[in-house]
Image 1 (cartoon, one colour):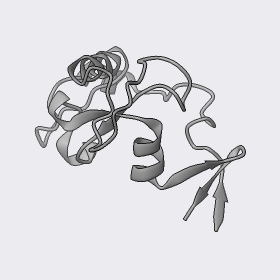
Image 2: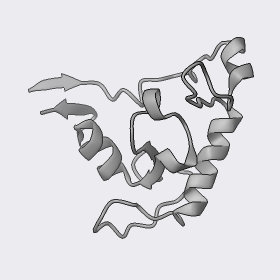
Image 3: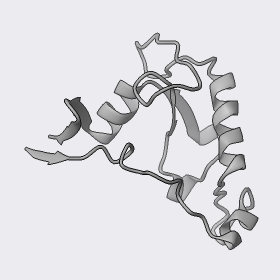
Length: 118
């Protein structure tokens, strides 16, 4: 069993995005894939939340999750298919709870301050 620190909580400052990338936000790249950053990404998260009515979209999960809050209680915008090939579009994201996004899709579990990777 490998113990890792929480990769999300470890981040102390927002990801820095180059000026060139920020200018391209929302425009298709060479392969026609749309990548968005900053305010555009926040807007996509809001649209995803409103479309899914704040409910976890995993089959059998009926949790209604707030838009804001701490990592474990708020909802997460998760990509359905990888964003490298399918981009940041409303059709490629869904609203999930912490358990279904971080634990199930990324394989991390909470255990007293660190995460275990099985």
